[in-house]
Image (cartoon, rainbow, N blue to C red; front, side, top):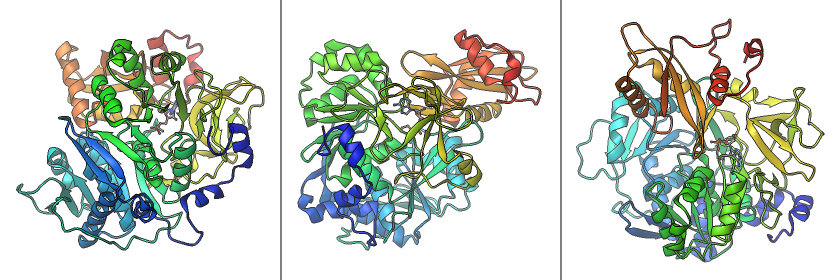
Length: 565
Ligand code: PRX
């Protein structure tokens, strides 16, 4: 239970103004996330408190205080100012989970520019579409990843600067700079950009069914909701050691891997490595992690790893554990209660919502398999085909949210019509289907579109299909999400070959590798089925739902109803 009391009393007495009070924010004064995550903590006497415990891939550990965070983010902000980057310009971050990612993110915000975090495993096509759409003026990257930027830089006329943050001593090309935050002059103070709640802050790309990824634009005012939900859903308190396993290339890694926890002055753990059960449990034990925020695919992999590994570690520091990104199966909740002595608390939200919207509030009865209830201040509903709330408990419909809320995205970058299409009858339409039970608990039913959710990451079938078409052997293709016991879904592609090419195992591997290189390991099909042709509607649209139904053995019924999907 939080200091708001039970979920019911919290919901009743809640007001978003509480966020201002909690953050010590006065109306009319500037509101900059970069300041609230760094300088303000120092002003509150937390300058010497450890902000970041970072373990690199070889197991070495470095610790940075809030004062370090303040000075290093200042250094990044003044570097951008020296490079004549102005407020409102987009600056990409393209690196592994290294400390510079966190310093540069906050530095970009302090300058008033818009941070565009990009997953470091992106291949050149994924990188190009996002950098092109955002019109990025600069990119921060590392030696390891600059090669991919070099391959596409000539197609990015707006890109003025490429900063290699570990590039000391390397041969640089035109527009490239080497920077080293450790040896750069200390920047004791920086004039933080006087942002308001409506000033753009972060641009996160997310996938839809059609078209290329869309950039959900967030604002500095998102911190109000990120702060409150971190406090009341993730239950962070002074003295906690918190670990969010998400990469900041995705929204969880920024909203709850940077902004929320540091706005509260909490110590965070970051691991450079990806999923490794022993390293993960080792980190919990070594750093005394108290609150852990992870995702169902990782939890299922830990279940598969088994209890024997759990027993090798002392995980008694853990106090609260949460999950996001995909449906959390009831077995995972029951298992975690058995082996960790704590149930995973599911939370539901999206890139577009910027913060947690539906969750299992601490202290609330958990119904394993349910996403919980709307956060106080949030109105969520399940809508019928007429876009009015379905009143009958248990009946499935489209999950919708009543705008506005503080961390709501403000547009899709360069794509206002797609943004507007997300609103119907005064509701924001999430793209998910859900049902609400008699006690007001929300249950996830499925997506209402063709987007593939693999291991908590959304992959657009369109993006995969477009990349497949670039392969010399591919005439046409369709990508679907195939059910998978661990990743929920994996990408499966159906491919019709051009004349002169024959199906073979080698060709399958070649195509799979082609997608991994061009898009990312996440978007890479796990399986390719060669077909003569693909089922299409009369207007020529590929019937992905038919392919999906064939895959799962579902009854598809009258396919004429699929014509306009
Ligand atoms: O389909 C839902 C699923 O992930 C989508 C949002 O993905 P993204 O924008 O990448 O953000 C992920 C992290 C916030 C949702 O539309 N999803 C997210 N959380 C859950 C979920 N599905 C079921 N249960 C959840 N708890």
